[in-house]
Amino acid sequence: MEPRRLIEVMALAEQMKNQTRHSWTSGGRHESVAEHSWRLGVLAYFVKDEFPEADMERVMLMCLFHDIGEAFTGDVPAFEKDERHEKEEERQVRKWIGELPEPYGDELWELFEEMKAKRTLEAKIYKALDRLEALIQHNEADISTWLPLEYDLQLTYGEKDVSFSSYLKELRRQVNLDSIEKMKREFKKSEKEPSA
Image 1 (tube, rainbow, N blue to C red):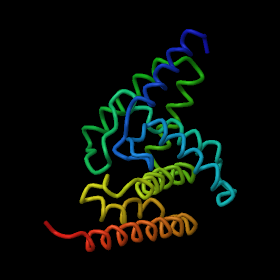
Image 2: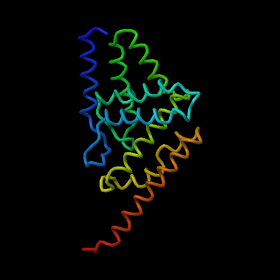
Image 3: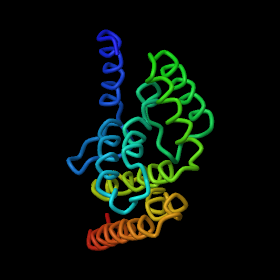
Image 4: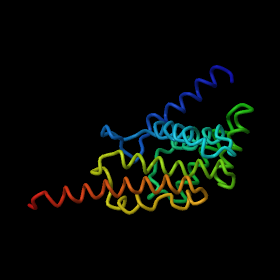
């Protein structure tokens, strides 16, 4: 890639660091889109032994690029995102990819189409891990950052996405156990606090 164009691409990637997500870190600050994408790639790397038949390098590329549209639109939490948000994000990504030199434009467009269709094993793994990473992050954040709807969502989000894999179903079950334990601790703590 021509150096000036590469610097422009890096400027867009930098925007992913500036866009914050609904999720909080254990350190008490909002997580960035870039942090989520990076950690999702780490998660994919460490489950590669569970999917020897999958092209895990492709899964890691999906993890790296899946939220690039949020560099343009910002993050909209899953429980608020609707078709209008999806279409705008897709429009922005399509425009950006269309401006990339070859072979990057074609390669990334093919990757985004694969993620959207969710038919390949790689796309299914990426989507399940995307859901799981968000749940793990919520468990790591202070429960005071959770919205009331997230108590139920934490136990149901991503169930369909992991259903194709016994390993991912077990990972989801373990995440659920952590969520339940976190909620129990909060409930016990609130029972001990005197009412006003």
